[in-house]
Structures are given as C-alpha cells and as structure tokens.
Image (cartoon, rainbow, N blue to C red):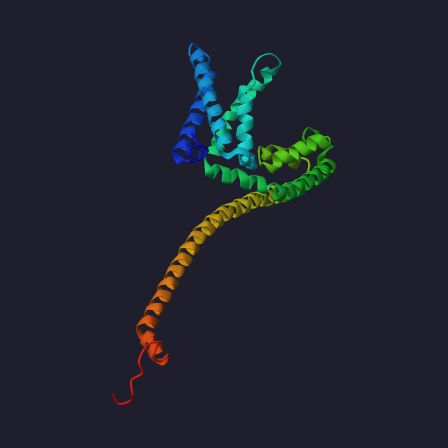
Length: 285
C-alpha cells in the first residue's frame, strides 16, 4: 500500500473504532486473567494476538506519519505502552509485567472526549499547585495550633506534629470528625469554634477552589477545541466565498467586453474614418 493509502486507513473512523474494540477486549482479558483457572492459557494466547494488533497499528502509523508521529504526546504514550508490551516478562524484567495494565489506558487516546479531559487536567496543574500549596500551608498552621491547644489533653489525636497533621487531614475530608471533636470538647468546651472554622476553610472553601480551577481549565480546553473547529469551518467558507467572488468578477468582466463590442465598436469605427483603400464619397451622394 502507498503511504497516502495507509494514512487514510489509520485516520479513518472505522480504524479508530476497531482499535477501541481491541483495547476493550484487552481490558477484559487482563481482568479475566486475574481469576486464573483452566482458561488462562487461552487468555495468554489471546493477549499475544492483541499485542500483535497493537504492533501492526503502531507500524502503520509510523509509516503513514513518519516524523510527525512523535509531535503528539498521546502518540508517545501509545508507543511506550506497546514497547513495554514487547519486553519479555521473565527474569529481571518480570516487574515490567505489572505495566501491561497500562494498555487499558489506551482507551483514553482512542476516545477524543477523554483526551480533552486529561489535557485539561494537565493544564490545570499550575493553578491547582498554587491552591494546593495554600491548602497545605493552612493544614500545617492549623496542625501546630491544634497541637498546642489540645495536645496535652487529647494526645491520641494531637500528641505531636505528625499525629496532629494526620488528624487535620481527616477533619478536612470530614471523615469521622465527630470522634475527634467529641474527644476535644470533653476537655475544651469551646473547641468547636476551632473545628467549625477549620472545616469551613478547608473542606468548603479551599477544596472548592481546586474544583473551580479544574472546571475553568476544562472549559478553556473545550472552548479552544471548538474555536479550532470554527476556524476551520470559517476558512472553508471564506475560500468558497472568495472563489464565488472571483467567478462573479470574471462574469462581470466578460459582460463588459460584450457590451463594449456591441455598442462601442461601430462608433469607434466611424470615429476612426475611412480605412486605407476605401474611396471617399462626396458629400450629398
């Protein structure tokens, strides 16, 4: 097959859908293999067939796209997953057998909507890093304050900095926080003020900021993809309009020439006078 034929093949919709089905079948095989049993040899054979399909797919894409294949980060991920699948899972490489489960993650590259979500999450990392850093500062400061306030009376939750930080994390997730607060309120009746302020600040405000950053990043990613599609549509429409205008301009020019030949031609000929060889006629005759 020629390169252009292979390119159309790997970029076709049915090819992508077929590879998605193979990825899902591979996920079923990996899950089924965890049960062992008499079907295990057949599952291993089926897994080898799936790996062979992945290798053929990768070879076709490399042949079709050449160097441009590695310009996309998702293609790098697919290449890494297939390369890991070819490493023998015996001897010193036995630990790499665990990485075969990464082949299930190829479903992300096969579904464009999933790629948009993952890309948005990666783009949200800088914003999330800032918010998470602020959250860690709040947790650390609150842990020290709680240890100084309640460490002597409730050492099982606030005995030292490490225990206090772990308790602060549990309080942020609102997991079994009444157990902690009840133990503190037995010795400190006004301790509820600290817990209410901390939970409102971390669980309700800071975590919602993280969610807001992620949602904003996803909206921007979706908007960028739609903007790119709109630009392509507008470019096609612009080319169609310009082609139509060019055609109309040619038609108008042709009509002008026809009008000039019909109306202006005889007048110009009379204005030019008798041509060479014509006999001049006396006036009145």
